Length: 312
Image (cartoon, rainbow, N blue to C red; front, side, top):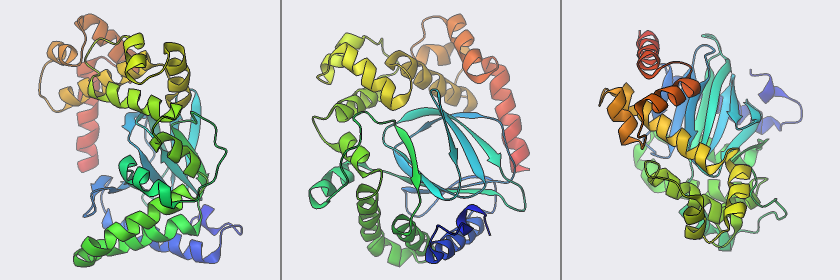
């Protein structure tokens, strides 16, 4: 039994639920990697060994590590994602994630549930939530895991074996899950992101705009005006939530998308650079190398080799 889940300060029922959820995920994901499920918002993950840091964009989600651990770097903040806590990302954030505890005997097993902020917004009038969270709280936070959140996730995973029941009961469980999130430690922060007119919500709109228009020139004054903020306020709240500036965020989006294009074999380096908004292929290659630790072609070759080894 996992050491974190067996701690005396965690209720016995939650320990049993955690053990069952761990066993079900291990059965549902026999091979390494991320696995889609019959419930589109629910993703499962397995790693049989520790790995190197991997750059990614985390979408709004709630995440559980049931076994093993990941280390996540957001800006200058470092988080340890391990059993006994749950992770919430309220906006799209660029991170570096690394599996730091895993083995074939005890693989790293994780569950991720994508959050729909519109559904959260619809639920807000019916929720008595905690107050007092700071404006522009970080885009990624950890909180102690309790049975109120673990129980609906376990019931949803159970329903993956009963697709007819899943279609009817899934939406009810999702509503309960969102209710538990909103009435828990992360509730006020999620509510701020979802509530129109708050600075966190305005900043999230700026993040959303950048996600859609990352390949266009970025003018901070125009982006700030678009979301009804001053340039200085946008810069302050943007960094508080994402850990980086809007310009750095745009660069992250561009480099991640270029990497995806190259890995899919859809174009050469110069074309990828142009598609994501770079005018200079040489500047693109320099920034790519700084971000991913190797020039584009070498990095992509390394990723493909790693994927081939994992598949074997």
